Amino acid sequence: MVEDLDPSAADAGVPAHFGDPMREQRLLETAVGLVDRSNRDVLAVPGEERASWLHTLTTQHLTGLSVGQGSELLVLSPNGHVEQHAFVTEDGTTAWLDTEPGAGAGLLKYLEMMRFFTKVEPRDATAEMAVLSLVGPGAADLFPDLGEPRVGAVPGAKFAAGAVPAGATSLYGVRDFEGGLARRVPYGVDLLIPRAARTAVIERLGVARAGLWAFEAVRAARRTPRLGWETDHRTLPAEAGFIATGVHLDKGCYRGQETVARVHHLGRPPRRLVLLHLDGVATDHPPARGTAVELDGRAVGFVGTAVRHHELGMIALAVVKRNVADDARLTVGESAAAIDPE
Image 1 (tube, rainbow, N blue to C red):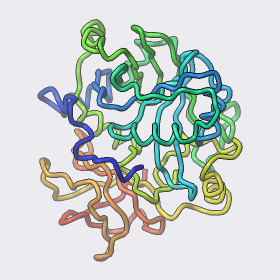
Image 2: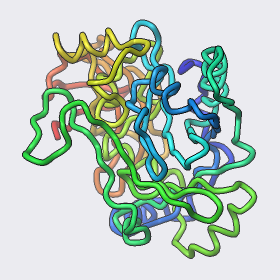
Image 3: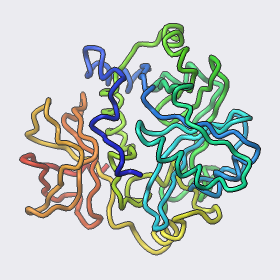
């Protein structure tokens, strides 16, 4: 469950920076840097019925997922609230799911409860496999055969001729790499490799290193949500920006589908994900996750990720009520906050 995650401890165990977080941010935005994300939880789902089984349990259309393809998925509550988010990568015998640190146990528990007589064998593979991320525009040059990631449009957006059709969401190229897999994603290329080979792979790649602080700053600037940071126990997929990458709007029945369809067809969600510019915050003390966003002394949302960006200054991803105007004069603690209207 989302509420079981501990954001303050989730990113322990991987490098936060390599001496200059601002330089590392610029590297990830202009070239390519390698970020150690081996703290992510990894599940393996082998079994001949894995694709159709995951298709029925999640928000993503997976019956046609084949070797050399990956995507993203959500698990929702019966009321349509986000409980889990994961990347899925297919290698021909196993569907690999990687998710937030600490979220794997909850996801595995749910999958095990839903096995029944299905021919699948989900297991925790965190001790076997680790995630490294090549982030930045230069990552595509290292893996040109993976092509560009395909990402759907937000509900209501119009598609140009020949673009991704309505209902389609993420589809990512995948290939073998160093005993594991390389997966093209919007921010670069993820490497899902044997954990025992992590150090050797890093050395062989020879790509400049960047820490998780830089990765988080780039993620926030891109308005990319993170489970447990930009979500709480009542988050709907459309509120946190998960629709384009994680929800297929034309697929069949799954838990929580009624809420997704109702929000999409009948109205807007009650909250929305925004990027805030913060004024007057000490650079070494960004507001904590969960800090209230206030309008005229009244809470209208909460801060998810707050970071210092090398160009934008102190920024935060926040979830606020839909009716909060873009030009509203907001506060976060003692700081003034303004919504970036994009």
